[in-house]
Length: 344
Picture (cartoon, helix red, strand yellow):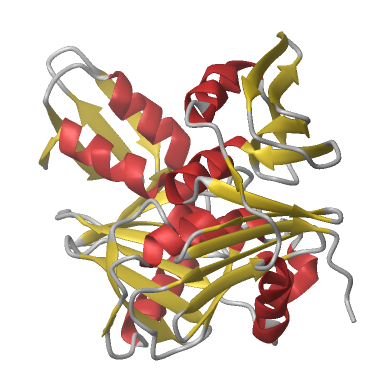
């Protein structure tokens, strides 16, 4: 079959989050082609995209993606013969072995996912915005259960671990409660999904282009009331205006910011003292420090925070408050709290 190489590469790039980096289960490192769609699948995420194929087969994911990306021609011919895929253009000829052993297992799981999808329901227009802002406050350790999720109930989207909490008020309440693992939520927030439904213990999200992002959910009781109470405690604190040039300063320090597994990305440090805000970052390549003026008269405090999150916070809220071992950012929609939160 002849295919548009650029179109296929764009599709493969989109569904790559569903590939496992290490193959713990057969086909979790593969692109799986069906007659009308192509999919990636692991135990936590399944992503499918419409794609017409003459054959059904599975091919090693990263190797196939790199091969297709390295081809310069716009049109590629793919032929499946004797458990081999032949890739041919005017200047390239290649063969890849297809997966045969236990090939049906993952395909059956994906088919079952589709067969058990319930009624599609509309998502709030700011659903992915809520996910992108709240996923940074969830724990990265899945053994912590509900604390590793972004949870939604009614119009409240929230997350909480032992050091942070975030809460976003959706424009429209949701009919169902969702507990989405934070890592899945972070990937899902990149997709312009407009609808959702359930399929057994998975929740499925669909874009207007029929891309479907499905992820497993976690059971548990999320402490919505506890999270709301923490934010209520902060509303009476004095408000401090953030410098208008803070966002540009953060962007200028990013190249020397270090990666941190706890906050799932690059981190920077904000040091507040009398009339000064110092933004600093460091990694193996070096360090950078920038100082800004600020109307601040409290005791000095340091805040280590995910750089992407603080950039998004500044877009939403230009004011913050400081309490005892607490830093609170807020606007009418989004609130973020950094504090040592103890379980009762």
